Amino acid sequence: MKPELCKVDQALGILVGKWKPIILLHLFNEGTQRFSELKRLMPEITQKMLTKQLRELEDEDIVNRVVYPQVPPKVEYSISAYGQSLQPVLAVMHEWGTNHASHIAKMKNDYVIGDSLVK
Image (cartoon, rainbow, N blue to C red; front, top):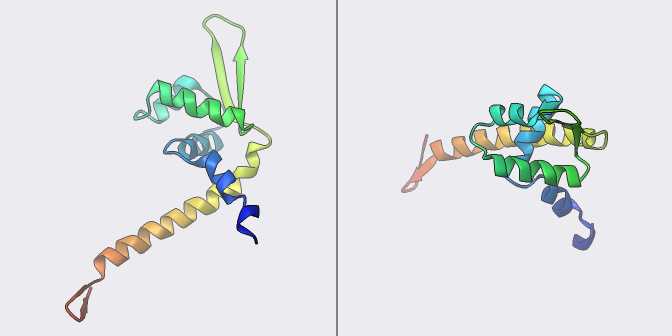
């Protein structure tokens, strides 16, 4: 494949960031969520960052945002039909990340002193 034809960078651009994969996993696992429910699931994220990440996912048609005309306002977020196609991608990435963490931990336990491999 020619490098200029590779769309991995485009796909990663949508998922890049500390919070987007976590937001998506919560929506896949928990289903439709209100903003406050997502915030409660991720106490470390600021409201500003959660809003930004949700808007970016909405702009890419990964997440649906439904606003109900009531007082107080009610807004719900869910995975769009198109966004459902990311579920197997995230599952594989999660598995790879788990394996990679184990690999790195093992590497850190196996180190060389002089010419000897120490475990």
